Image (cartoon, rainbow, N blue to C red; front, side):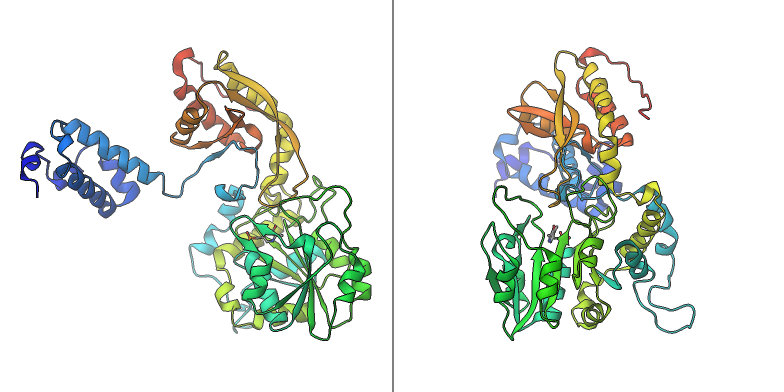
Length: 458
Ligand SMILES: *Cc1c(COP(=O)(O)O)cnc(C)c1O
């Protein structure tokens, strides 16, 4: 032990230190035990650090506050998405409309009829109206909801193709984001992968010729995050369905959840797959549908029943927060109300407004900020081939440092660095985000003494 340095740095008592005005707010935000632990750990470091001998208490406070604020940044918090990617998996994908959030507050803060059929008093189905509403949206007989779409794919294969063969095109053996690979999922669920076709061409006959008496399923997987251009051929679903033996299931991992949206006509909607004869179609709840994180499987009633009876369903089933939000979203969507539009549809409609917003931001910093034309993408593994024109602001200066400054704001702002410049893409910036972004922008760059005035943009 180093008694020498301990004499030099007289540390305050932890309890006393916690009373300081700069520390107190963190207790509410991080909890007293966590703040105490961070303070104790820091004091320990200081005691053992000879070079610290001369630093006074003010430094100590500043250092601890810095550590506390760093820890606070780990807490789940609102951020402003200035990346230009509207459904960004790192930024929580789809924000939920506040109207929907309010609608489900009552059912979630009280007991609910989650598994009680009120009409009979008997045990009921967990999914409430969700399956019927999805039926109206997509034309599917029945549906079920699990925790995410990776779960949907796993459950479909596990329950319907365990120990059997699943035929997948070589062009669709995709990896989505953090290591979700179709071949791995197939292996985990005990099904045998049969690859057909080539990366760019898979025909109907490729599938049909691969069928054996052990084939359980043909799985079509949407190429969510890449596009193969040039000479490509993917299969015509109606034709495939017509040729498939009746006992071979045609399942589609559609991924994005496009249903009635009009911004991506080239993307096949869930209802279209159902109409063309897919037996099951699965997709994410928090991509284009714009709901909470969920996986949704739509399709044939008898197959959905088999999935629901699988013991793993118990592990995959969502709680009432998710189910009530989905139900509320689907009702608003079927009624064609604003709250039923997912974030993608809402923001893509607003893209023309980004020009005025970019000009407003840039006008506060005429020598450093420049309005630029950019493109937005839907992202989150959806619509890989669609760019939507929009505007943003490029800020001159050291990009990495500016990006850190924006991330350190009280509502952190996530931009992008492109060609060495820091860029705020306004496609994903909602109306209330913009008000905050502008204020923070003016705090970060105060030199030009801006006049902060908010003018409604609609
Ligand atoms: C996004 C996506 C998944 C994974 O969905 P999660 O909801 O993230 O689990 C699987 N397949 C396709 C085609 C996707 O687009």
